[in-house]
Image 1 (cartoon, rainbow, N blue to C red):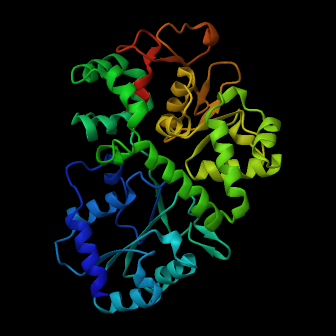
Image 2: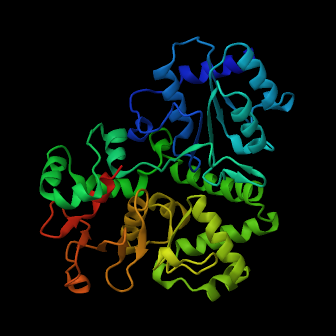
Amino acid sequence: MDKLFQLQNRLLDRTPMQVVRECAKNINWNAQLLSIRGPKGVGKTTMILQHIRSTFPKGDRSYLYCKLDSGYFANHTLGELVDKFAMDGGKYLFLDEVHKYENWGTEIKDIYDYYPELQVVISGSSLLSLMEGDVDLSRRCVSHDIQGLSFREYLQFYKNINLPYYSLEQILQNTGDICSDVNAVCKPVAAFHDYLRVGYYPFYQKNKIDYYDIIEQVVNYVINEELPHICKVELSNTRKIKALLYVLAQSEPFEVDMNRLSVQSGLKRETILIYFQHLQKAKLLNLVYSDLKNVKKLQKPDEIYIADTNLLQALTNESIKVGTIRETFAVNQLSALHQVEYGRNKGDFLVDGRYTFEVGGENKDYTQIANLPNSYILADNIEYASGHKLPLWMVGLLY
């Protein structure tokens, strides 16, 4: 176990502390069992290591961070590690890449039941399910899902501009003041357009040249490794899923046709709908339905979006229509905290069953949402709001 402490300390020494994401402060780190889930590359490991560095004294052996795909577990079980750690007075255990450990759910349940003195944090893929077979961790576990960077966080990470986050209600009610505050510290439109290209994943600063290549590597890892391992997708279908994703990246959301997708991907309609669910959980797609309360298990989405604008750019070599980029951003940021539904020809999106949003450019008018209560335009290329026409970048301040 000394080797694990050495590896941990090496990682902690290399962990940057200049910027800590706001969402890390909202996590209940004191829970007996905590799960942190998110797609590869959004900074889960960094968040955990930053918490350790800021919470525990260096060299204290009451805490231990380790990756469950470490070579250590080729010759040791998690149960053996926990038994030794607890006997030595350990109190805080951080287990990363938990989905890569065989039968992890059963062993985590045993740790929870038999070592109540331990606080355990598990981290893994967005596809990580807390209900596996006979093992149900959902009642025992406090769960947090981590997104990529918001526009607000991009300004903090890459421009050294610190802004508070706002609730949707605050944005809609205090639009003028918020716009003035943001414009006082930056040129939001220029920064926003940079964010749409390279701002969603925290690793851009270290890998500017290979940024899109790394995003593609993340996609390949999810499809080739995580989907077969976690969702039991047949290996023979991974190439077809990849082809499906590339077709979607080059399609406008409202042009998606299931029959055409079936022909182009070589997959049956029912199989495609199952894979859509997997890809949404993996944070590669966002599926938008017209009535979330009555959505059936294998219902065709009304609109399908690539999960974020940076991923969209990485998946296609062709020019992307600006309307697709704008709507992809709006769905991505709004769905992080709110329920987003298809607008049914009365605006683009209905949010929380209450607010109607139409997304467009600076010249977008109110024709489509005229006379609708609580309706707003989210307009690109504007710095200040005008009535119910808000800058699109404002929904990037939600977290």
